[in-house]
Amino acid sequence: MEKVSQSQILKYCLKQKIPFAIYKLPRAVDAVLIISETVQKIGVEELFMAGEDIYVMAPFSLLEQKVLCLKCDFVIEAEVDMSVFEQIKKIKSHKEEVQEPSFCTDYAAYKNQFQKMLTEIQNGRISKAILSRIKHLDGINAEGADDFFYELCQSYPKAYTYMAYTPQSGLWTGASPELLFKAVEGVGTVVALAGTKKKQGERIAWGDKERDEQQMVSDFVLGVLNKYGIRNAVVKGPDTVVAGKILHLKTQFGFGTEQITDRLGSFVSDLHPTPAVCGLPKQESMKVIAEVELHKRTFYAGFLGRIRPNQIRLYVNIRSMKFTNGGVDLYLGGGITSGSDVNNEWRETELKAQTLSSVIKKVKGMRKLVNKDADNAIE
Ligand SMILES: C=C(O[C@H]1C=CC=C(C(=O)O)[C@@H]1O)C(=O)O
Image 1 (cartoon, rainbow, N blue to C red):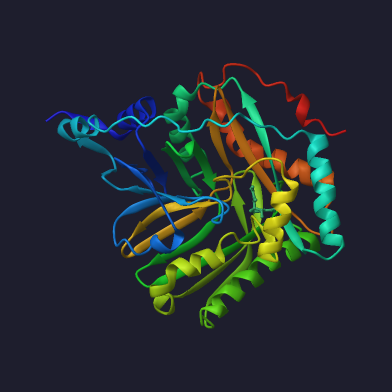
Image 2: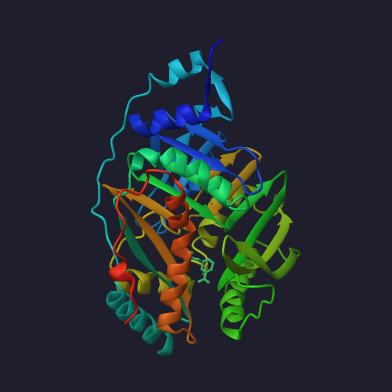
């Protein structure tokens, strides 16, 4: 029987606007394509109760938006028989419900927002917050999105690479270096990832600022584990990890999941968003972010991944972008603490932008125009 490849089906889903998610786990060889006839909006508590095979896309703020849940109606790992493709062709198209206009944070606006956040840190309201910005790139041909995804997988073999479309979220893609929570056969893993440096040579000298920033995330994770009675976690790190041209500090926590099996929903909502993407204390920094940032984060710094009865793998949606009308919005964030400098932070977001923009450049015909980089100049 005639076979149809995963890439052909991905192309079809993109063109026809069929809800899908394609992902490749870190160090895995192949990507997995999931196709869903419908997308449901559910609360985080319900995520782990379904006992089904689902792919979820959660927003940054679980108070503002529900989690999008794709049932794994079709799971395509390599190729399928033509008869399966014929069934997929029967799935209805779902246009993007609300196409938000693109957004771009220029340096002046970023500087202003940075000052506001720093003031909140200096006056003691919060001790850390992540300031994010959007960098808009114009003239992107979304028809190359499938090639982009496979190129992304090649470029970042150690990242969690994904692309997902739902009518509620639109088309998102990213290469995340950050695990939120994994539970496989009774073993749970959580990481604390923070601190950023450009990879240059062999010598790595982490400063106090980065170490403190990462320690705050580790302490927060330990606090959540403690709350759930997990006191014997195996701690590894902090170690330097490589994410493309970027280095981070990472601590890994391993533990048995027996204490949380019936409380996974509340465990994940206590963990998310960690101070790697939100701040400390959690609720107050969430408020500061909402007051200071002019864009809605929607799914940036949310989490995504597949949930199966005995396997949960959720990653933080960073180094990600959304396709907008004729362009892309890159979402870029960095941790602000009392020791932060605005120009260094801006440069850090520019470095993070290269994670995806360098791949756009590699995909033939994806970039129609060259973006004027005027909005990226530091004063
Ligand atoms: C929030 C982001 O990165 C986080 C993860 C690693 C290092 C980070 C930092 O150094 O600020 C951030 O906490 C992002 O890339 O948008």
